Amino acid sequence: MADHLDSPGPIAVSPTPGVTALVGPPLGDAKTDITDVYAFLKPGDATKSILVLDVNPLAPLLANSFDSEAIYEINIDTRRHAVPDLSFRIRFSRVESGSQTATVHMATGDVVADQVTAGEATIIAGAPVSFGPTPLITVTGPYKFFAGIRSDPFFFDLLGFIDGFNFKFGDFFIDKNVFGIVLEVPNSALGATPRTTSLWGRTLLSQNGSQVRDDRMGRAAINTVFNHGPDKNIFNSIDPVRDLTALTTEGITFVQSFENTLTALGGDPGLATVLLPDVLNYDFSKATSYAELNGRQLQDDVIDISLSLVTGGGLTSDNVGPHTDYLSDFPYLGTPH
Amino acid sequence: MKTMDRRDFLKMAGAGAAVVAGAAMPVAGFFAWNGKDILRFRAVAGMPKAPLPTYASYVIEGQVDIRARTGQLAKSLYAGAPEAMSGIVFPGTSRTIRVTNVQRTGGTLLISGEITEPATLLKGEVPSFSILVDRANGVAQADFLGSKVLMRLDD
Image (tube, rainbow over all chains, first blue to last red; front, side, top):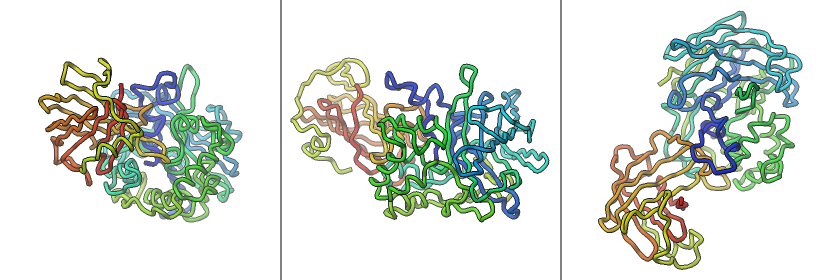
């Protein structure tokens, strides 16, 4: 899984006394559990980009709407310093009479992580959420927006991973859904420095009148494959700018922890500082390719690429490939199952 | 599934010493004797194994009548590590097992059975089932989709 059902997604039902706050609730909520982040050039028009933030694994089994108390962010760093200079922030209304709407704000300038209302301009308002097979698309100026249930584009032999890289069970996600947020933006909105641009998704939950960090993700499967136990939630709670210096519960840095895992898996420990900070580099002046560490398309086989990297070529494939239900046009995510 | 030699099992479990027959059993919780011959238990293993972070919990639980050699077990794969286990079962991984035999050897029980819905089997998963329960050492061993897994018995 890219980040499906990983912390803080699962709702703990029998947590160990004393560590409740570190393992799931009260922050565990499938509605804000990020599954994947994608960024790719619009097919047929390289002057625009498609940004995707998927949440809610196994939808609608665990949740059947977006969280009206949450903020869903796609953060953009234009200067390769792991601090956002731009943020697309999506907020949802409450579900009323089976309907829910979204508002997309763009925050620019000094986008400080916790100043979630500073410098915002509305770019999409009142966009209806899709709960059925037909995608409801909202177009405002140069922006195009979709939010709703879709076929999960991610592909992976999840049971093979759980069985210790024994890949023989096929694509666990072939018949699963997610709640997708898809935004088409002109590249000009992403700044003028494509070579140093990166992005990541983040979700914030409302708690006791303030916003708290819930989940975040740049590249695929980073938190799932490298972080153990409570470290997953520590990782989720910090910004990418702290990835190189923050400490795990063992008192070592996340970089050292990643180096240890890479060494144990047969990979190059030097990759730790490539994988961290956990952001998705996205040079929109070039073709999108996850293998080239440049963005991520729906069909990019991120697991095969990652397996080969983290095992030093010891494993090269989980033996499953891209789904066949991706759409050729917006919102690109396939019809829900 | 190949049945494991008891000596190998104890070595793998890290027990090192012989099982003490007739050790005192708790009377409540996941592991309990209900009457003389009825055993209730729950065995849990975090998956996958190190160096990968634990992502899921493999759970086998249920009740067997040792004298009658009958009972029913369930095995499931839950999201979350054992110390943070969720109530979310990965779709397609839950099975019901009808117990067909129970063999008691000293302090261990070898419970055999059959999955009641063979049509749902995954690749590598076989309809026959067995779990070796070592109650004195608080461990068990069972099959997970073709691989042997050492499990912890919950109190």
